[in-house]
Length: 389
Image 1 (tube, rainbow, N blue to C red):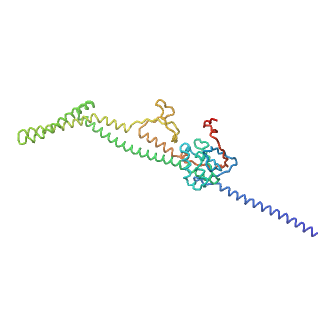
Image 2: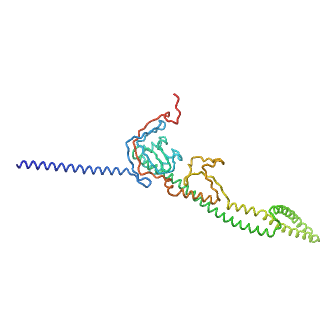
Image 3: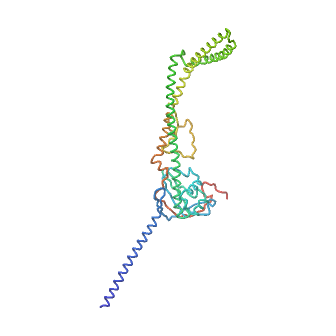
């Protein structure tokens, strides 16, 4: 009987031991799972002030390249990067400048030597490629030799894209300051011209009260005649002075001095009449010219595009024929109003939400895939004529 009890106790103890072992294994697995979760959390990287998660995918990405474009180092991973942006970097920056810009970022300092060799010796357009773009979003593929290099490549590309957008923003801010300066300068000029117009009008009214001329044309003709008379009197005055000195102490001295005094008096009267005639003939034109500069009308034809956007900087702008007005909006107003119109567009460009698109914000997740290198022949590309066999 005691042997049966002992056997039963032994069985119970064995079962309890198995349960404890199983429970310990579950706890250990849970701890390992939590450790694995911690390693997964390490796939999150801070990029441009936000946390970006890197997700691994099994499907292989085919990296198609021609032999002459291939360098000594091939990429091992490809990362698809989505960005909120309206800056078409591929159109505005040459591929080699884009690669050099990425290498100059702070994130590029962590590149491995293999990654640097890949970027240095591989054809620049094959180091990163734009898949597609639409207004407000773009998708790029960047390549890295290792998984770490690929993540750093994503970070460097995001930094370059953001810096590239900041250059546009800085240019627009400089343009805004330039427009503000021109507006202030034009306001000051306008105030001075308005004061000058009032001064000319007062002078014109005084001339009209004292002049004997009835029209600007008559005054212009009279000014010409009076100018000729002034030249004659000037010559007479120049001749009578020496004559009076030659005949000093004789009766003719008084005669020449009397003629000299009469010529000088006549010269002053003629000069005053000539000045009045010139004012009457010229002041209306000066007033009209100043008024036109103050209230001048400026007509401009501008492309009919959404507000807040600028045309591609590398696309040549072709002026349409005068008869072709489709797609154009006509602005008509004073020069000051035109500058204010331009300033309003720049301020709208620098406001939200457009300025956020210019800064090129990366999405929260980036997918990474292993790369399979596929060498292609130039004859395989549709844009290259087939070689003769």
